[in-house]
Image (cartoon, rainbow, N blue to C red; front, side, top):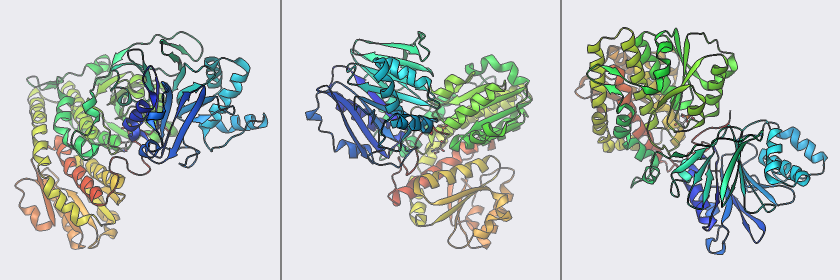
Length: 610
Ligand code: M6R
């Protein structure tokens, strides 16, 4: 949600902090701020708006400090304004903190602190924590102890950095439920919520565990638990390079990530497909092969785009392996006291690995005794660490807030799981080989679709002023219709709904008139004729039909205003192809509307609050 960064070393800190904020801005972009220590005083600058607004206020030439903390915010408590922006101070202005997460008991803490005479200026839970730490420091006169004692009283989540003139050569960092890592450089340390913010300086990182607190000085670091026990940190290497988090000549990260899909899909199946055996090897599931074979049911929990890929997975696993699958919004799963049987296996899908709802669902399923596996992109993320095992999708950093390449990589991994389970159950070697061979062809077919950009731009130009869109698909392509609608909503702010094509006549058909563009996925499969009839129903009500069809399908032209022709594949893998033109259509509509494509309003890349 928010992004935090701290630096301690020998270099001037302001440039490093601003650089880190820019790299993490996709995590939150309604305000930003920083604190440094200079001439024995804390200097804080903060501003509503994007990181560029803060940058305008920072005179790097006037800053010689080599220690500081900074924050880019996605508001949870209090409006996005200058006062609510982080960092926040204690009442003596000698402690400054940045915080990612939510202090759930802030209200009772604030009441108590007010009755003790402390004052508050903002509406944030973070200021309460700053003042609370300050109040404890007055008694214990030791910064780490003050932070530790405060955090023991706190309910909720935090990735936290604390800077203080009391101990001006230290940063205290702590984590519970919000991502935080320590970058270990040469005579310098960076602490950040995101590897993207530190990779320019070091690839050596320590991912903090929940309830760990770390004191960092120029000379080293010391990690303990909040209960004051020694921790055993492991230094790991960041898997990606700087170029992966830069735009590389594209106007937006979203477009770059759409165009990366031939490679990212390849990376998702690379080394995992056993073509000759028509089978799959997934090391991350090794320990639960028996549970999977004997599973009565598979439950998939996820949010947003990851939920849509879960729905594709449901169709895939049920069709190839005959195991019943239920897909649940992670945000609902936890609160409806889900029934999880002894032989159920839970998969949680998350690009970021930090989505609070999904993480809570993982914990709930574990509490109920389930085996829980992750399908995650970000290495070392909370969900990757909290699950019993799982599979990384290897899509590389996804910076555009609208998820694109993660969706297709998730589907690729789900197809591998379905194939593996199928081969354990009823699928013949021959059938397995056919699927495996076709999966290998998918990257090349996506390259062909990416060549249709000019055609898609023309359609986007025509419909950019529409106020509503419908997306229709059936079978494997129903979740793709949902995903197409979500992409358009997120980045262009046009209202869009996805439906199973046949459901349209049960209600949404009332919306159709000559102003309604209807995007229909009508690839050749066993329900093609039915979808064709659904298109006729739209036409009869003067709706404008944009069809995604297979190359060679001339008949579909007669009932469509526009056809985007894509290569054919087996029905199981069609979502990997059909979603690509929908991603491009959303992108070019949002571009026409001058929307901030990589940072759509009100959204954040990873939603770390419930
Ligand atoms: O990181 P996750 O996959 O757990 O995120 C889940 C959703 O928040 C995410 O997919 C969201 O819907 C995206 N903005 C979709 O483009």
